[in-house]
Image (cartoon, rainbow, N blue to C red):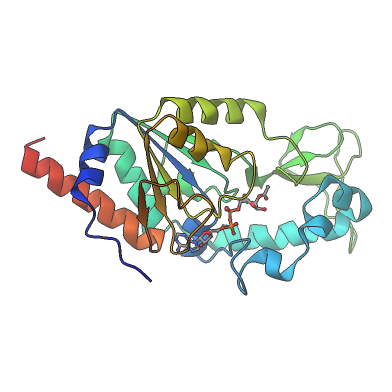
Length: 256
Ligand code: OAD
């Protein structure tokens, strides 16, 4: 693995000067909290499970019980997980810049658990449940029979996690806010995402085409790597705290 820090001085200067910093995070930032990513070979969920059988509206119609139990298993992983130093470093960064927007593809709520405020969830939240038919968010339900999904007490529809399945549109307001942040920010950190799932992957490209600073934090290269002005090759839980530390040192030097 290439160690790209100590960081280039002009990166720290760009962070120091930025009026609006955005971050786009993916499953990699929660990997150090023990939540499996999707596309890492061997350990990624999609290496073991077929997303078309588990994370599509068709799968839900075909086999709601299977979809429900798979998400129950993922929910149990999320409930046991704690934010890691990568999540916490983004909380610290939010305190240090005039405007900070955190856009996440993750459904685990760990950014909010760490204390981040301005979080846009592009793919929903796995800890929320809603009815697939009437759309109501529900908090309680009767336990389902073995192998089945629970039902909505209002309309009898199947309950599902409040996440975006493949083939479904993103929540419109969240998407709109994310595009606005990409169009407005001076610097975007792209952390722990393979940057292959659209439309989320188009957000860093907006930043690139506007000539603003794109920074990738990922131990592996991605389709975005060639567009990033800075590539910080390492785990988010190490790179991000070091980045905040470098910013603090820079500010102390400048007397800020
Ligand atoms: P992926 O699993 O596609 O990518 C995870 C990325 O994190 C990879 O590029 C890894 O190299 C990187 N990574 C692994 N460990 C890391 C660490 N400790 N620090 C930093 N990076 C690390 O996950 P996403 O890009 O988030 O969608 O996937 C996008 C979407 O595809 C998900 O939101 C989900 C999935 O299907 C839906 O469920 C709608």
